[in-house]
Amino acid sequence: MLVDFETLPDTARIWIYQSNRSFSPEELEEINQALSQFLNEWTAHGSTLQAGFEVKYKRFIVIGLDQSQASASGCSIDASVHFIQGLEQKYGVELMDRMNVSFKQGEYIAYKSLKDFKKMAKAKSISKNTTVFNNLVANKLEYSEHWEVPASESWHSRFL
Image (tube, rainbow, N blue to C red):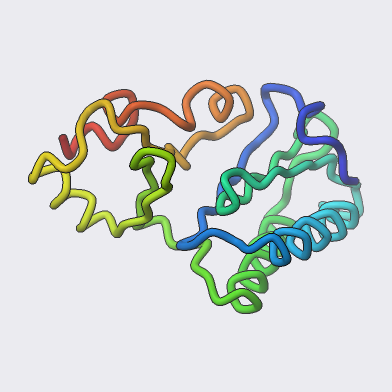
């Protein structure tokens, strides 16, 4: 069952999918509709899942699940992965590749391979103060407080 993302508890499980490019306004409208439909029908062993989503910076798809009602099962997680893979194919984007890093360069969101990010850190093109997106956060509270942080406060710090 689709719920407003803001109403999800701090303990809600979070999945973040970063796109290798920004979505156009038309794509965002279609993606919002597709996410709404998918989450409204998302179940685990016949139990309704209370989930919400938001799309940040026109490129991050964030799905939250209130596990106090029902937890995602292997099959329901597989369904969500297939849904995301369908978005990848439809829009010609990468959403599942965890070996890429997104960070801010001014108001621009940069998307680089981990290898290139390491090179940039070595060349001092990025610093401990560079704002990075920690897509490894596990719940809504972590997402709220530790998703968009200086590199020094994230796993990215090991490359600085």
